[in-house]
Length: 295
Image 1 (cartoon, rainbow, N blue to C red):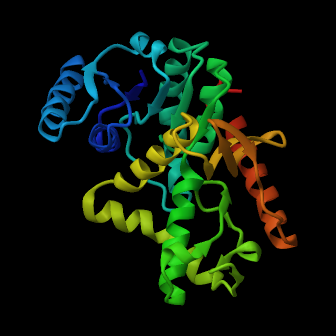
Image 2 (cartoon, rainbow, N blue to C red):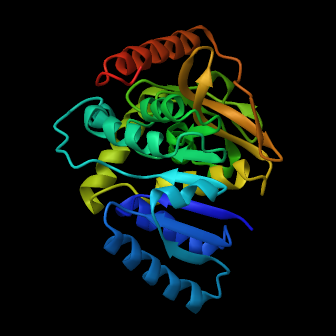
């Protein structure tokens, strides 16, 4: 029996829990929140959904320690803070969110399943959770979402179907994301990527979504669902996830076979390699500046 846990019942947590239940991704779903009342309310609401749709997923509310028996956990918690950053917006939550992630890591230390991090800044918090918890399978979904947005954007700019586009966005989930234009193809053939237009859209899209509906939620949910299917061995394939690579933590493509990942970073041209190194350096510096006790 596949058991999944979701930590956090805000906008992303609720959307993800609804999608997991609708898809019947696990036979058991455990939701946790800072208040038991909110977790129980969400579990009751999702149970209504499961009954109406015939989903096999049994939803329950629980405590953090109940999650230790789950096959995979998704972290969607967010501290209460006001983000005043006008650039590097995702980094604006680092100081506020890292104590929360450290507390979760301490409670779940030694967990042996798969952990998927959604909370921003996702690259830093993926590393923080992995190092404080000792868990060996911790991934962040930022570059997965960036790559999906890249495919949609390039398809629109070149007037081709999104499924015709193959290419990656790696590095930081943020202003230093690296578009792998040199290896991007459309229908298997190399293309000239309008990089400036692509970068403008990747930077503006999250803010536009948040301004309209309050928070991005469905995009991250899609990235998590795909990651869970790969990591649990339900599907073989590749996706871009934050993980440890060459001494740093940032997004790279991983190819999963029967749930086991292997890095499959594409060849980078000189500019892309330089940008990836700069992103890794930026993330390392930002991690070292987190509140004391996180390095």
